[in-house]
Image 1 (tube, rainbow, N blue to C red):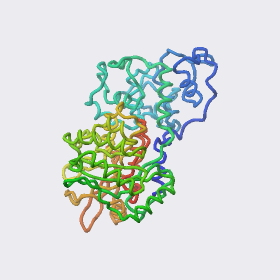
Image 2: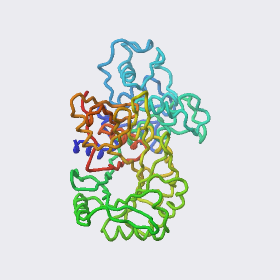
Image 3: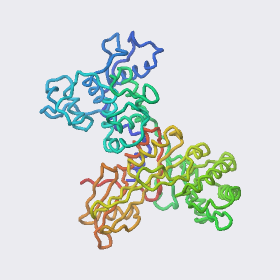
Length: 501
């Protein structure tokens, strides 16, 4: 299981989405209407080489011409690798009969949810509009639920009246832009060259080389193979301020040194992982910096991973001062910071100036808010719901470069006995629950989070947790924002696989 999960983390952009792609076609040279100086020339060449769609003729690509809805769905079917052969023999749309040239692609798109079934017509020969293109791509990526929620979020476009959530997501992913800063022109036909640019942008995001991963550990027991990890935080300190700042060690020096050696042998950097709460910032900034830097240097670490959680607005100034001072004092050593992310529906912590933190750190690791609610008597407590990850990354788009961001993946689940919250539960305990007689496991596509019912200490139990499928979903979403790193919150207790049901 751990090897499988590690492969998931090491391939954060997840090219599996494109595994069904057709073989490359002939090169795109020879289009008289696509000079090398054309802004879309490279995207057109690659799009044709990859076989997504061709020119209008051998000599002309059709720059400036619109693309029909039928032609775009055919291109999308090639891009996403949809099975266009084994489709229903009963047409979904009255104007796309079984002998239509685009029938297989249209039915495959409808079957996977990329097309809406609200109408009995498809209009295959109409030009696809910019709005329709955005909607189809977001649905094809599987984000219909988030798009429905996102319709209430602010959008920069004043001319968007329908499907605002879909357009907002496509914009956040960098797939579409407006004609101006405030106008999207949703009803304008999408030009063929624009489609090539969009498909290649998405292709590059989904197939971007995976960055090395991040993890946190407090023990060598159960530690997985660390090959491919960029940095590993060793949980060995706590920042406290009871009159004077101090960083008492929480791990024996010998054990910490042994862990460092293991991390270094894997080719990764070993950071001192220090945790603390809001009161840790009560001391003098210079004194706080001094004790943190001393702990790093005395312990022989390659840098600091600082986690100060649940900071309110009153702590923002102190946190900002600490970031500026630490950057200078660490003198070239790495500085990673874990911060509570902007929250959509969870608890909001406003003590983090994300832009300033991003400027002064090597990596900002975002702790995503979790939900806890009751649906009747059934606890609904997804761990770090995907919509919260989307919201956080969207809020920070344009503020911090994606290559300086990472998502923190919580390995601990949420346990409920009856409808009563019973606290956190380790992945090892979750695996015991899943192995018990009568246990049933599920996967919520609404939250992209696993949950299971079982018996725990002779009581009916429900547990929400992240498994490798949930980790993959978060890695894929992050990749669409240009964020290619995850930080596993506990390398000694990695998520379980989803049992077949």
